[in-house]
Amino acid sequence: MVLRDQGFKYLDSQLSYQKCEFAEIDSVIGLFGGTFDPIHNGHLSVMEKIFKEIDMEEIFVVPAGNPYMKTEISTSADERFKMVELALENEARLSISDMEIKRFGPSYTLDTFKAIQLIRPGEEVVVIMGLDAVLMIPKWDYPKEFINSCKIIAITRENIKVTEIAKLSGQYKNADILLLTIETPNISSTEIRECILQGREFRHMLPEKVADYIVEHNLYL
Image (cartoon, rainbow, N blue to C red):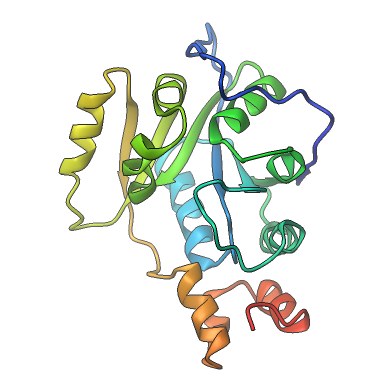
């Protein structure tokens, strides 16, 4: 499923947000954002295992348009969107959205969270993030507004020290963070890009159609 921008007015991240409470929750949906440069089997494994651990109806996968905290992106927003689209085309409960790509200016997760709430009223929206990204929240623009507005699922692996998450919760009293420990393939987009550049094997880390797209369009060379 592809959720494309329908001309919604995106919310200004400089506003002070209040946490949205629903009297009745029909279902829970996830928001999984990232540069996805490229999307890989590790990303897909995380989402597959979240469905097994949490009663979640759907996950929106949102490629970042202009991620203000990353200065080096190897491919265009359209190329990254296409790779995610190829990776998810047979996944009924995973939907791709171009709302951040179509949005003018920096990509703020808080804006995307609020936009999905508008699109899907009556449903609980939770933000899915790796633990490393969660611990970087204090360095974001408007971290307090984000923490106060969003419920977060922080993904980590076994034997990873999580003492810092307690400090984050202490720093932001309204933090609502679920720590979910799952085992996923140890794959990174950086590793994939390096393998391609150095002529090493990389296909085993990617969905087949994503690997084919990269080769066909000479990406990461």
